[in-house]
Image (cartoon, rainbow, N blue to C red):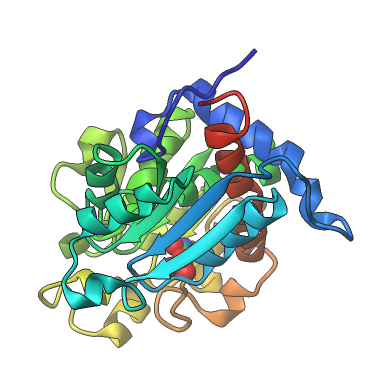
Length: 309
Ligand code: CP
């Protein structure tokens, strides 16, 4: 029997290939629950999950909430502005207080890299990293891997381009680690100011030319410009970025004829992607959203309901 022997999900880096395959296979089994009339099973009845979102979030927050509810777990949602952290309470004290109420899992999204790791050493509840600063966004990478495998029937051997603000993107980092582990070939592209030095050490190719990045690729993944994480101007303006790095139909036509176009959201239409491409026939962006619920159900199940702890 395959086991998921982890208390927490802090990053893709901690997962073995077998762990990733187990998450994807489990998500595949759970996905049909969301297609039923009654979208609920009793699997996690009696378990409780705290969704602690210290950053704004639409997709991650909603899908974790839906995932937990569809498995019948009790959920509590807490935002930084709605918690006593605005009165000066520290993250660790907040987490200890939450722990005193004995939740099974705490899902945390935080603007500081390492915040989930800090909590994991201090609370008994399992911790799920729902995005920490510029470090990792493991559940996003898992839902992206699931979507790629669903659309392409494999991951190994695929050629993937990741284009945009690589330096500030936890989605890029988690996806690079996950895709390389699963045997894909990854090329990253963006303005030189947005590509971290020595990123080749992760096993990726680098180009500053989006057309070269896209040529003959199976998967093109676009990223948002993360203005909120930049402490200096890294390019002249959004119009220049759109004109040099924005994905349009002409550039996308250089990819393989059955390319899939991905974006983790939130999306800046007219900046990193034209609406024609975002809503076009190659886009799997809405499939990513739908798969986010199934993959997060799988992670909750494996951490507190299934063959894990
Ligand atoms: N992809 C993602 O993390 O989206 P949210 O910021 O809406 O959660």
